[in-house]
Amino acid sequence: MVIEYSEILREFALVIAVSYLIGSIPTGYIIVKLFTGQDIRTIGSGSTGATNVKRVMGKKWFFIVMLLDALKGALPVALTAYYMSSFDDYGILPVVAAVCVLLGHSKSVFLNFTGGKSVASGVGTLFALNWQVGLIVAAIWSIVTWISKYVSLGSIVALAIAPIIMLVLKAPAAYIIYALVAAIYVIYLHRENIKRLKEGNENKVRK
Image (cartoon, rainbow, N blue to C red):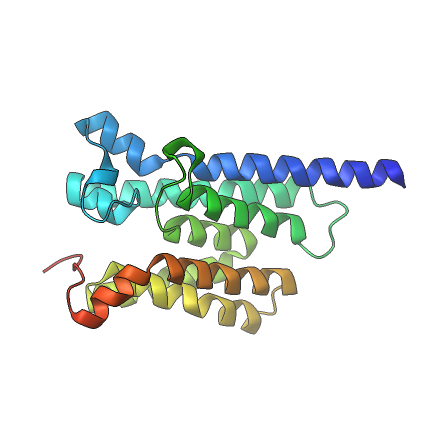
């Protein structure tokens, strides 16, 4: 039994470390720095996410960074679910991986614990946990963003609805709780955007 517990602890430690480090890879920062020499943290909102990358490099790179961040979110969760959950009947380890990815993206160890707002990475984790939920959340984000012209509003609405979708689709309790925690965290990271939305000063994704 002692050996089993030590094995579980090793798996938890490995999942936490690897997921956080993968989440910490500053995709937007690297791309902007590589192609323009600029530090994206000194531009626009200061975020390393796709929306801020668009301000520097245009729409094409907005989608590229978004896709890469989503893959960055999905990969650790999918690998954890596939390789490291033999003892985990409740889906806790994949959720741990998902949480660590979000923290890594928003508080990157490579950028002095700065980063993005974890939207694309968060949607990636949802895809890995439940592809139907991820697909619906991505669709809601696209629709709300297109109609409102505000990426931030699309992000807030889509992540806020994610726990409800998890519940309706009868996902494991751990996944529902994660979706709720992720929604609260991402909305918290958007607190300045919410303030600007209320004041009518938020930047639109297109005119």
